[in-house]
Image (cartoon, rainbow, N blue to C red; front, side):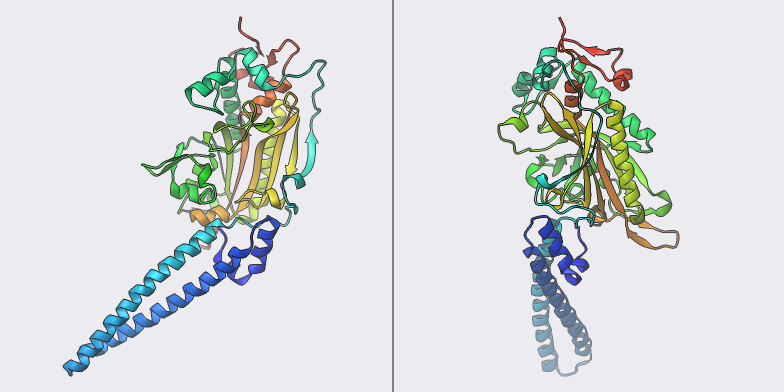
Length: 424
């Protein structure tokens, strides 16, 4: 959440940020007007309460019953006016809070200007794209032929955009999760196993509410949300806490399934298992002092890249432009892996510095040894997201006979399976 003082004292900064994000700038003016109204109401209420306190003392010293009664009646009217103003104040504060909660973060100066994803900047490509002496199959053909992806039964038991992984496919998914968690632990992250359902306050703190309410699965009876990403519960770990500076940075990693009400239409982009309402992901998350967040962003990006390098997958790094930047992010790097069967680049990680945006929403601060307090910075990144990493392995490691070689780094979790072949 942006600081109200920034909006009221430097509105041009926020207007420019919204314009760069291709968004309507009018909320800035509305916020300024609401804040002026809020201040006026507070001033009037305080003045009336001061008047009432003063007169109440006078009433106690009055001898004339008629004069005393007149003052009491006048103060009763003042009390009614205070009650009405308090109600107006609550309404204004609620409207102001909702507007503030709807504003995205301000892009980092290093974030390139752009209108949409077409203006994202490819910074580098790592690894050679595989050359096949046969036509590589997409995973939606490979998986069923090997008996490791079952689309029909996924639809049967749940509905469209769900599938079942079977045998070596399920084990490969599990191997990827275990490999990534163990790698991130070696990279310095502390593993967490958070709840897969969270309170609305937690979802708000992470910046998912109110903007993404329509994309979330909710238990309305209990007012709990299924997590759309482990970023949400990892943000919630330290809500309303003050962390001692000597405990920073804090590096966490977590696996969770993720649940999102994806709005998808038929077509190339949704074929296979690229996009679904449920998927697995390993997350990296960092709490740090503001002066350390740039270095932590570099580390997180390098850690995500190492994951892809160890898997032997060709990938590229893109920097997102202002028009494609996520709601809470200041600066974001996407890692995309090459999928030769799909013949496209698939995003498997977004690494973002959020600055103090989430810390303000979640009220997470740090305290120095001298007692100084401030909002800390948070960063998040996929390390990596499934099933797209699984897709990349199946399509990059496929063989002419339709089998798939298991990357060497995953074999310790595959029980000796080095090649996935169709059973029977």
